[in-house]
Length: 100
Length: 394
Image 1 (spheres, rainbow over the protein chains, first blue to last red):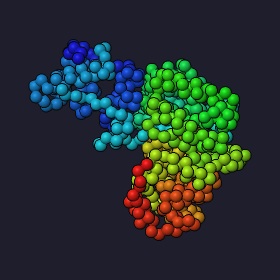
Image 2: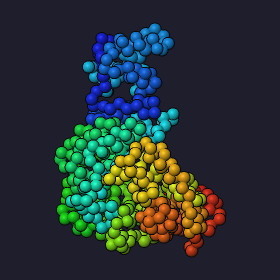
Image 3: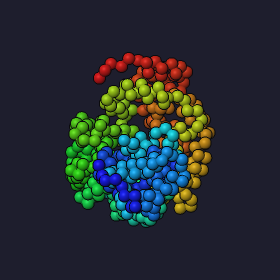
Image 4: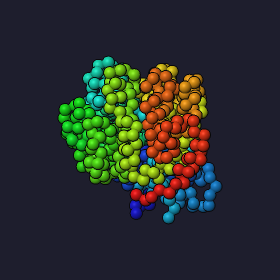
């Protein structure tokens, strides 16, 4: 497993994927081979994942994303940070996100 | 551990509950030109046809259409022709489509698949099977169809490149006099292609010229058409044919009434022809049924023009007394597109297709010899009886 994401870092979608928003849903389409295992696969995000993804705009540090989401959503302490870190880690492993 | 993303196949993404897509796949004919000159082709023009080249969309125009499609939420685009790889800007168009996040389905004869293209497909995969039409199993039979010397070797070279680079593809055939004795060999060879999960599909009941541009070619196509009985024999080659037909007939049969459009033409997609005109489907090019994208937008065509078109009803007494009342609707290829290419109208019964549907229905025991299906009153009972029939295992 990769190291924990850096809360001071800015993470952006890799150039090897294309993120699309269709019918209010985020789908991530691999551009190059090696992102998904099967030739016809793409990625979808659950509701939490989508809320976080929309904040990863290349301007916000990860800790800013956590703060903004904490202001917007009611959640138990630490849960939002856990979700943000969890999503970013997952997407880093899948080469969908990279550090700016 | 919690997970926030899920890997899904494209087909699953469009079918998940709560995720409804208004648009699906856009077909784009990049060109009507082809480097082959197949006997039976419904569209081909010579590769060097100056007039055809002049009328083709520019790279930028095609990219604009792809951009419109992506912004509307289309998931995939099918690039076809003629032979789409004939376009010098094919790579540019392909990359643009993929960078819009579109899946690309490519229809090709494979003769123009080069090392460079194969490397491109390996590096940036289309995300769906490339579909290669194969015209014969020998140089002799293949080139009798394509009338292009060297095309057999070129196609095999292209296919070998796809295999070597492990680029997923399937093959399919068109049954014609030069190759119809080769189906066993074709299917045996096709079964060795790693991505062929089932038998190859065949174009059986040949279409006439879609632009209604050559009576001479139409006469040739008609001469080569399989008889309905020959067509049925080839359909029966399909694994578990009877079981599949039982399931099919239980869902898709029944008189269509006076509605002209009972298919998916113009629903959530269409075909952009080589000149930038959007068709409800590849066959239907009647001037009243198409939308020039130069004068409007993809969205307007799909949301306004095509729904209005689909509300049309037949006025032809012949159609109303036959096709509108016929329960073989699911088996029969009769549609406005086929009527257009055969007769230049939208609702004239096509005799060849009627015979083909009746031959299939007779073979399945749905009608008796000499019966005209539109006169059958107990069709629901017949469908039910057929669907319930015990089918011996193959």
